Length: 308
Image 1 (spheres, rainbow, N blue to C red):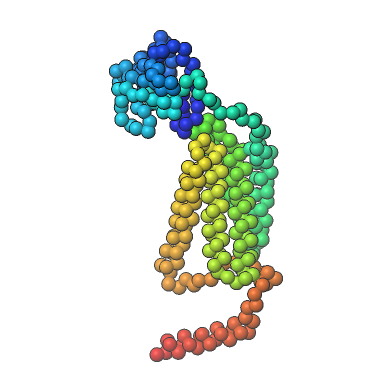
Image 2: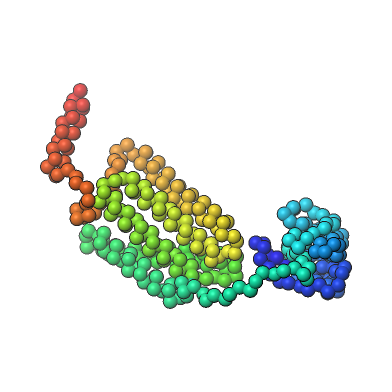
């Protein structure tokens, strides 16, 4: 029996030909599938490694994938997958060579609850410290607890959603593993955006802020990819494509929304958001006196235009 993604779910030995498959207890292979007839198909050997399969006038018929058309009979090989009801299977001869034995590997450390709890403590400490540094008044410090609560609630919801997806698709919630991936992703995003912010400020280059957003989108896509790897057994290429699409839609939509809001406000001015201590400034800027002088010249020019 074969799953949706080609994984083997069960193997049944067939000791005689022809053999019949169905839901009845006198079948050679019995399927517990309500959409399979009591006697659904009959299989006969033809040439070496090939089989003739015939539908026994079932209601739902049979299909040889990837075709969706019902077939009354077909000749199949060891790699062909037949679908009857909600069950997929393929037939292989006894001489079929199976793959080599795989080495059992220990589970990754990040899947454990200990690593998850360590990651949670680090993330909470990071957000508390960041909220403390950005608070400029005593009243604002009271909002630190609220911001931490918001982060905890959003993170718990994110992890719970992915755990539910894992439970549905892979029959295992993997809560701790999803939690570690989420916390590690938040830390990576924070480190990346902070580093690029300091670099953009130090070099006084606005394009680094755009690069920071692109890098954040790539990191977010990788986080989604790791969640998908935990939740589904589909191919890695499929996971990568889905993760890339989610990252593009999320960050692309956010960037488009910000640009639309900025375009609707004619008084909005473009400026860098990377404001840090002067210690981190690498390039030499203008002095405060020169800045004030330029501002006065600009004011005189604007007043002159208004007087006309």
